[in-house]
Length: 388
Image 1 (spheres, rainbow, N blue to C red):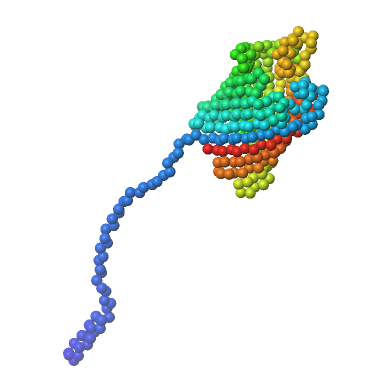
Image 2 (image 1 turned 90 degrees about the vertical axis):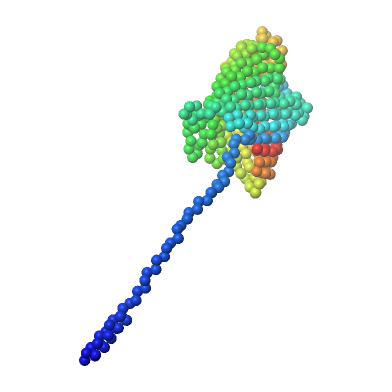
């Protein structure tokens, strides 16, 4: 019995040991240390370009034909048309024009325009005589005034005018642009509203007292409208101080002072008719008052003299064509110029163009109380414009 009990106890112990789950001893894994290596990073940035001169050049050749009904003489306004008895004194001539602008620095710019007129008919008239007209304008942008949005720019102008007296002038303007304060909406945007006090000195071919000192102020405005339209309105108010007495009121009056106001009002439109790649065809229109002119002294109207006037002999000698004298205080010229223009963008910087149209204007009769007789004059032009 004793042996049996010992055998049974041994079996129980063995069974208990085999029933237990054998758990392996934990394995300790040592993590390798993390090493952070910083590398030099090179960032390449585009170098900021400083200001470089830029601008454009536009060269254009233009031909003006004969005015409608030009050969139909009329006697009622002969004196208004320089005695030739026709509607328009300037016919069948060409104009070669070179114009452009150079932005020399961020603040300085130079505009130039040179026009060479060529007579193609042999008649000696204002613009058909072979002559050259030059205009140069220098601008200096002073920036905004203080904390305001009013920009101040100085403009100095020289112009050699085509005129029987071979007049030239120099002019200084202080141009204050208030466009940032003007009314703007989705339909009307004011891009320019400049008030410009000015001084101009005008002189003739001789170095004498035949000069004109002028002081005054100009207003220049430009507005963008819907559907490709824009509107320009300008006013030029000028007080004249002459070196020599001038003839006024049909030669009956002489004075060394006069006050004048000229008003320009133009409407423009550009409508695209066709586009194919680099080729476009546009319908262009411009027209309006060019200009309405008012004078304190009577200097407009049909010039004529009275043989009994004490000034008549001097008047005829000094004014063989009656220039500068008249019987009215105001005159105006209204015109419309529609054209069809073909454009070809040869390169991103070169544009070639050609156009044809006609100008409708009251060429001969411009006096305020009798302005009439509008006539068509055909014109064609071609040229190129390049930017740099």
